[in-house]
Image (cartoon, rainbow, N blue to C red; front, side):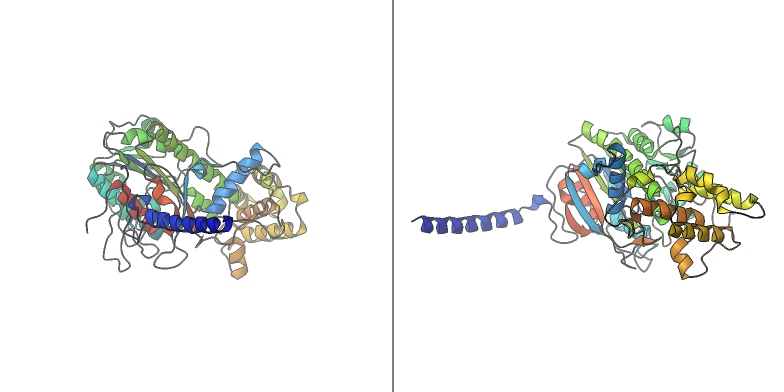
Length: 495
């Protein structure tokens, strides 16, 4: 009797389970897409949408920042301190290949995120033939009445921010991108400066004049930026302390300088209105740090990026039923790995804590030495500067590390610092041989390493919270970010 009842119970469970699977599979409001363009969403449309893009940021960049913070808070406890966005309830992952390669660039990947289309590396919101243009979601949302904000820690005309307002066949045409910024009609641009102030030949009208003639106010002092509000009209807020048109690396930023988080906070104030807003925020210097294989600068800028996300989350807490926050990346950069052959299964994030500056700041020190060096230059002349910047004592380096550093110093002091062979290309890329070697040594001591000075093809994460966030779980192509956002905001382009 017991066995017969047990068998019937199993059969009943199987039947019920099958019915439940069929029932749930048939529900359109679960946010499961049948194809790339058939996203079904039946929930409330968010009034406020934040799209955060950590340029060059994948799992290693996120995890290294969490491990660094954990080591700093609880030395030796091996307890990562989570970034705010990794605590979000929804987690997904994106494939990032473009029409050119499995290793894409920012122009094509940002186009996929902004417009839902694949294209060639270097192309922004145009097809592979460079004849057809695509409309980014910002244009669709602007037509619906949303105000639009674009924020970045790198030049405002760089590829990732440009993908949210421009359409060009070549990402390097920054003057044309700037002109399209002026005609976009979008409401708030904040962070880095314009790449090209005049046209390629220098004879064209100043981009500042073009932007102002289009009705924008350019705020480029701290006082002017802090005074902006939702009565300021259309504004471009240019960081007054920018270095080579970008915000300083977070590790180099002085306390009085505006941070990426400050530009997000100000953007919320400027965009505040009854119909809502969309704000794209890029942590662009994460990418730059990883190109240079500077793990500590990457960690600092990833933390700064998280601080900017926290500003949006504070806003979400005040408007939980009307806000959607997405945090993702365009691609990975540098091939950062948590693990190094000579440290085996160990990590030593405490080794990074004495680092006080980015490779860029140390470049200034080393270049000054090169310009004024004595007749017989020696690496030891820079020993105090190296210890102050990286916490490295030359006398305690291993013979292998000393060999790498002495070779880099010799190369740096030579008249030709560009790589002359494959070995030098692997060792230094296009960077200052001395600073990049110092970065490699301190990275490796910490148990970190890099495989490239370029991007890689590994997937990137997606984190989401708020209205419509359930749509973003799973593993899918980066073009679906556009499709999902279009469904949630009911702003799909006209067919």
